[in-house]
Length: 272
Image (cartoon, rainbow, N blue to C red; front, side):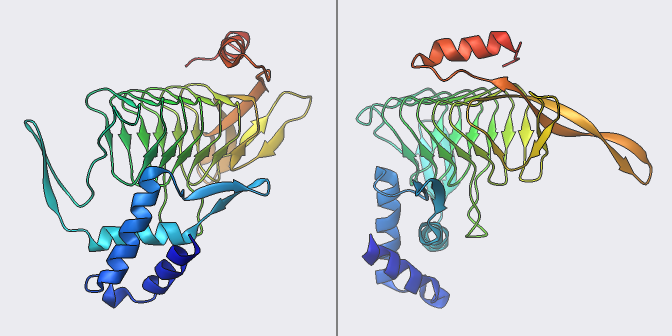
């Protein structure tokens, strides 16, 4: 991929040539094809941390610029857009329930189930993950293996700024219905988020499992059990309660993830 990376980096400096240089178009399409196949992804876990490959995001941005608007007809349905839709789901061993939509240039692993939902370009979804009804997976968002994304969950993506992390959800995570995750938050392996947890890069997350609360931001630790909460904040007009998230326990690391998950939900009376 070093060749492709260099070609995209050079193309990025020549915006005036994006629409007329056939070599740029060829390189960009090759990148999108590799994302589609899962050969490359926007983020990788390397040296114990998540790395964003800015050159891949650049290729996606250029792709939007060079693609022409086209009419897409699916039976009686009609769309008008620049990005084609994914297809050949049977051959890819992906279950897709009408009216789930995934854009070309996203990668969806074998064994994934897409209920009526939306997956944007650049996204990555690991094996045996469930994307439930009306859930959305934003551009470049990274979802691990055996994740359950419940109904109405909104997972934000990001193309710009280039250095910004998309939302990353690691393996064996459970996201309760109507959770909102944006601004590059990281949900680490095995975490359980109850219904309506909203996390941004600046949302306060309080670990209240000990005698004194511990405040963190931007990530949920491994195997944490999280519910929505609020805390008082003083404003010129008075004291008001603003949203936060509360870590109220730990999910047991177990070889039987389903049993472990059910135990966590029952033990902490989590609404999902």
